[in-house]
Image (cartoon, rainbow, N blue to C red; front, top):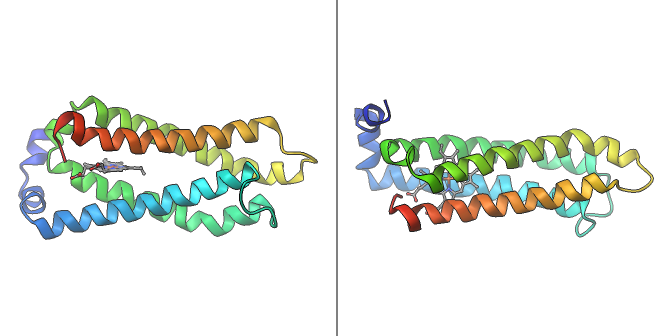
Length: 157
Ligand code: HEM
């Protein structure tokens, strides 16, 4: 299946066009800067390092479009990049590790988004909030490190 996808005419058009491939790579980077940047700003606010002058739920409302439009464009462009060597990526452990860590990081981001309104009501920020914010930052760093290791360890990309 992955080999068939990799050799589809529309995929080979991407793979052989430096312009198209480059465009999707730029979209991939911009998407992850927007997504990871917005999530880390929220996490740093939870840790009290940034943004102390507004409730977390207000900050989440401002950052939500950057987070999820960024994520959506990273996933969409990432899939298109992936199709060009799908047969190799699906067996590349660093790539599978990257995707697994991205899923964990997204789950952490969704839990934070759902909990901030409760945390805003609390007299003091509960320990799970601090732990989740720290875990979220570590997971996104790990996702980016795993992504950078893909070409280094497999020669793909
Ligand atoms: C939002 C989560 C994601 C993050 C933070 C992320 C991060 C990165 C980074 C940092 C690179 C550059 C690695 C390098 O060349 O040194 C990269 C490349 C790549 N990503 Fe992602 N990525 C994400 C989601 C995805 C998804 C969902 C897919 C596929 C389904 C994907 C597929 C790829 C591919 C194929 C490349 C290699 C492109 C190339 O170097 O030619 N990414 N990603």
